Amino acid sequence: MSFYRSPLSISAFNAKFEAQKIAFAPISFQVARCLLKFNLLQLISDSGNNGSSLKQLAQQTTLSEYAVGVLVDMGLSMGLLYLNDENYVLDKIGHFLLHDDMAKTNLNFTHDVCYQGLFELEASLIEGKPKGLASLGDWQTIYPGLSQLPEEIKKSWFEFDHYYSDHAFESLLPLIFQAKPKHIVDVGGNTGKWALACTGFDNQVKVTIMDLPGQLQVAMENAKAAGVSARISPFVTDLLDESKPFCKHGDLYWMSQFLDCFSETEILSILKRAASVMTPNSELCILETFWDRQPFEAGAYCVNATSLYFTAIANGNSRMYHSKTLLKLISQAGLFVDEDIDNIGLGHTLLRCKLKP
Image (tube, rainbow, N blue to C red; front, side, top):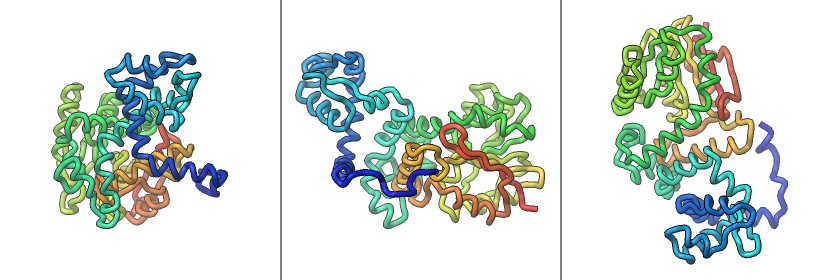
């Protein structure tokens, strides 16, 4: 990682402008969302280099000229658009906001899941609790409530979660099945996407999913629909409850985008319990997006921003970690990293762990 190692090469004048962008960032965000929602960016894109006039845009939408005007004029200031005479033309940033799947996924997640709750970030930082979660429901953490979220919010949450993991599956599956595991324990398996991918890759493997009852109900419905319910089993547990048993007899224990959902103390407890049921022949595979392992600054930006979702919304005490933090906890749990692979999918790292001799 070469970025974040020196001051930005930027003039004081431009730095002051960047500060104003931050001050008005919530407004910019909502303008971008509305430009997409009301199809204005698409209409302007369709007009090509000639662009569209304010009157033309208003005629093609349900909005008044006034409403279109305040949106597209701010779009100019945000660098989404530029003017050709009096016509609005799509610029490069607007192009990627319109066409880039990652930008759309992040934007929907931020708006539907995080936006209202982030007003309580200050209180969350002070109290160490997800004070913004009340905007979504009455739970101590978001995880028991995932299956109960309103459909649009649930859709944005799972699309965000799956977008990053799904991009890693193709390159991960051959790595995971190198040792030909017969029984995989998917810790925190959520809706079962990884379990389904494993059963699709190897027609003999069996997978046990450890998770909360709400997530397991969805996972088993998905397994049944895929015709593999005979090879996917549920293991109901609350991984924050140290008194709950940990699934035994796994050849490979799998934790994907999972440990970032917990504090360092909780991670150590989970890793110790996993280690207690492992044998010298089994392994623990951890897939995470560490902010210090990102190949591009844009990735580090997204990962660090996601930490604040955990602070204000998810649980109040976890984050996207620096790799050194997790490596330290792995060692404290009585494990060692046998293989460390970066740049999987969209900036993931795979840590293959075994019991210390």
